[in-house]
Image 1 (cartoon, one colour):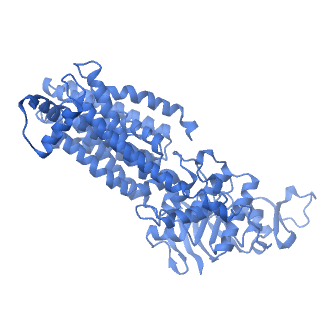
Image 2 (cartoon, rainbow over the protein chains, first blue to last red):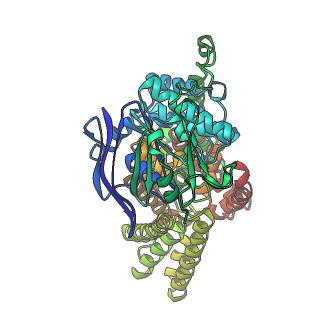
Image 3 (cartoon, chains in turn green, brown):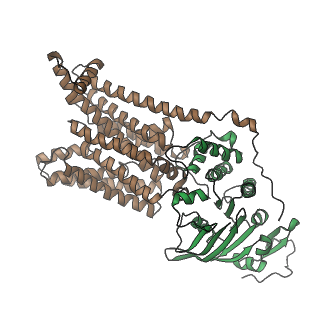
Length: 268
Length: 367
């Protein structure tokens, strides 16, 4: 099975954001959506989450059309972790995670729902915080609550919209570790919109680079990271070094220890 | 690719799971007990407020009168006057106050949840003043003959209120308005509709004027059983309907529109449907009792402090707190300066305004 996007197009009013995007992520893989601000990576995640509706194109998982399914059924397959925002009303961690059961429960949550919620809470190491109010949590803890909420949905596909951009380094790494563990242990397919190319290279199986609403590179990070493509996409001269264990590392040329790049491409 | 990085999130040991688990069920049942206690207190409060007044009547008299009117029986001559006061004047008045407060409070909870904003209510969004204008216009056009709430008055209040809420909420979602902007818009609309209602008063004759003034400060004076039936039925029908969507309302209120959509909620349909229900609630109350401000703000606020923000509990509990608030306010209004009666809208404003100001000032801290 795989998550397949075929010729997805999207525009906000007249402003075209996505132009004919097609990609495929194997089940249980962790895929990074990369690209500069405005490249359309968040939009793409929101389309798969059915927050936004594409003009045309299809999104399917295991051959099943995700855009045509009833919302509730779609929400049992796909979970979405938004950027953590402020909530106007306070609630306990457990109630917040219970929201993830929304597509599953009828009028009232059953025992099974509560068990799933408790498992998700345990899985994210929030066990001791479960009766706390959200307002008492740190940014990293609040982010983990959102991921726990998504896992309580028991999804096959997990989407994350720049979950790490507001977090400090430790929580960024922790979040990525958790998501990767979920893909490995539960076979969940994860798609993450993320800025940090090096984090993506380290944690993700697949890297999709978007530029101006089109895919310009797609593949394992070691192959998808091409210094010339990256330099032109970001408008900044970068080098790609291969680090230990075959993990590639991207570094702007201006930060290189040697002032003159050996075969640096011409920046704009 | 390196080996799969190990997660740092600690996997809790098995034995730790057993101990704190039962607490969840406890919290749910605590909230259910609070809800039951609230319902019990409400019934007692209605009975008690009926006893308050210049003509003495005890709780046993109230019980006796209710039993007589429900099950029938022989009405003793010496009890006839008390019976009439209780069943014709005080009981409908108390019940109308409770029903109106409950309806406004529930409407407030729904609007606050949908707009993710604890400062909105039918009153602060300008919906109630608009309904009052609609009612006044209908009274003027029918020459004051409509007097108390006729279907035309109710319909007119409803149409104006729906139009205004469509405008406010449409603008709010289209422009992604901040709290402050939304409230300013509400203030502007309130001013506009109050001015328009004043203009109607200016051209109205003596009789019509009196009928219109009734709407400008809310009151439950001259409550009749037919008023009670209609407002009560509206509130009692709306509550289970809204409660059915409590889960979806939770998703929107806590997680926001985008996340709610991804949780399988049809946000647009939910928003339109629930706003219509809450505007109907507010307009029906306005067309019977006039503009009673702040109940839709203070009722939910008190309820949220006691039972938390989960709408499955908050909706029924705010029904009770709103009802109790208006009931107590009305009882205070007719006792402090007895025999004159202060309209309940004025009394509630004295309680509501400080709470509203406090809400605004502490908003940052609450987040």
